[in-house]
Length: 430
Image (cartoon, rainbow, N blue to C red):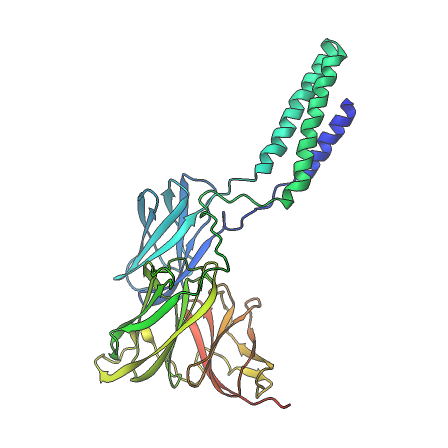
């Protein structure tokens, strides 16, 4: 009996490999793309394994950020406790450690220049599986009883020793059963996780209003693109956006002729409100497309158009709304190559772009391709899924025949490169 118990214990220990993480959110990094102080940055909140403890925050710069270091403020939503610090935005940032005292909902206030973003997040710590307690507790109890049984058998009668051995066997059996059946059990939520809320059929799309302030900006004048999100069933602001492709929202702003293009990431300035500052130097009609995703709802696209007035009040500087032309960018080594050369509507086409050395991931991807039709009614956002290298490849099926405006984007040290071009799509044969 004792030999059998020892063998069972050894087998259980051999099977008890380190448990895989049940919730990838706990301990994982959070990344928020932001367009702030006229530059593209990504705020990284490193995962933490213990609380109270340090929370490390860094700011990755993809474009030079004007002004001094970015100011950081982390506030616990539950008790209001606040800690502050600064971080230098850089291509390879040094992380600032701010001490947090509890798990749960927090807000990170990010200040650069005269702009402020407030990013909601949760401090999560993996509490471990309930099965771990049963596994290791069962083995520990079994080991104690096994030793006690050996000593009892050696010093007294064998009856009590056999009883201890039987209980020890029960402990080993419980541990073995937990190891076998635990993967089939639902994982325990980490400490600090939001309460599970199930909405029948999922949440509805947010009612999104996209507008500019002022309503009719002048050419050369800085203006704010504002996105207000409301839940139609309650009338309350929608503040449950999911971070997708490392941003709460992606906004694409283009002029009707395609000569102006901006791919930006609005700041959350209040619950249900996103804002980004822009400047356009040419009058005319502009389109704004905002991609966002509400929790338990799905992705949606909010659109609007607006006019830039003819009165030029600026000095001619492009500021935060740098203009691009439809010719190939000087940063791009060659024009994009299409296969087939004239894509057919409804059929996959491949677009290849030669990139310089040093391409770095941006928004979690090697490259991005934005496609818009002539009248602004359609927008496509496609990703290059490969490893950074000299060739970027996109695959896309254009929905209808006609002319499309396209912009390929990727990041290199110190800048985001945009390659604008046009694509003529023919109608497919029957």
